[in-house]
Length: 129
Image (cartoon, rainbow, N blue to C red; front, top):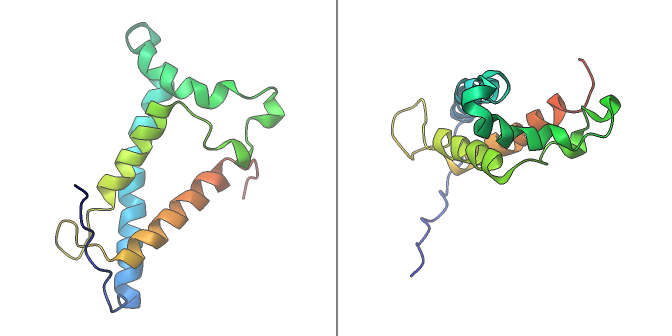
């Protein structure tokens, strides 16, 4: 009934491969997510109100402008908005710059997920570094 997961690799990737896979994954995530996020804010409401409404839930929970950038509120969003982000992340996790589909090392995927979570929280924290 369930899908059997492949065993974890015994050897860690080289430092270069780890950095390359993570950097490529972050870049690819940003290339795919940016136009989607832009569309949540800028597509004409007349035709795409349903699409913009999905992302509006992410902004509607703020009680004041000072709350508009709070790290703890990063993941308050419509479930379909969240699904879009998760699907993009799953897609980019399948690609490696070193050839192959679904060949990215487990450790690279783990570091990618931690880094993307950090970046999402950092960009919403309200500090301008």
